[in-house]
Image (cartoon, rainbow, N blue to C red; front, side, top):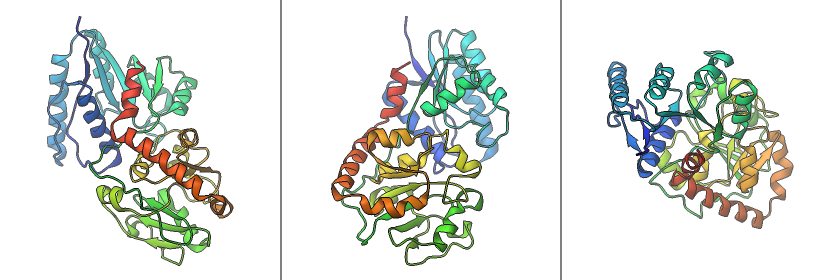
Length: 341
């Protein structure tokens, strides 16, 4: 009997988005593991109509090629077709596995928790984004065996320099991402109450957050392409924080940190930056266990915490970051999660 690890590639509209970047990276890891793409070759057209027909054709082709005992990895959410794919796969004697990128009941709240649990239950095995999400799914009634990814892998041709630390007298915190009022209003507070104990370097679309202005402790650099960022950004820490408060992560984006594995964490690590993250974030335990950053309850803690970090502690964190970065670059987290099934 031949057993195959399989997946279904699709058309990706905008690989620069974190979700599509994570999915295409996973596909590359799957190919290197010897997995079979049952669908059409990967494409990158921007046309919505063409995307619909390409994805539909890929799914039909995949189901025609599916064999008994195949393990079919589905990167969840799969628009419209997830339940259908799982039903047909199981009917044909294959084993559908769901790798969760996002939960619609948490992030966009477009479906109820009960609906999402029923949908995920169509798969035979679930790979949650992290251990916290896996526990939450079982608390909500999921009965399927469930593993955890931990961090999303991040493949890149760029290589982070080992000597990119800030030349400032105080540590430099890097914050990169899309700027918008619903996601990171806390930055407006930071620009009004600048700290003398660290400098904040922001990489993003300044126009997305009106009122954000530079000062002695805050510099706004604008958008930087991912490859350039990984190879050339200078800083001491990468900041992972969302919401409208500096005292805690709030709002839908801030609360989602309790459950998801932010792609931004992997992005910073690939750039050689230790992480500063909310202590209640789902991946905070990984940051602490691996020694790759600092976990805090409030941004106000940085005023007393950062001055106590010794050069030896910083070097240890950077060494650990390089170790985890290599694993991310090689698809190590997905490889480990699949080996546990």
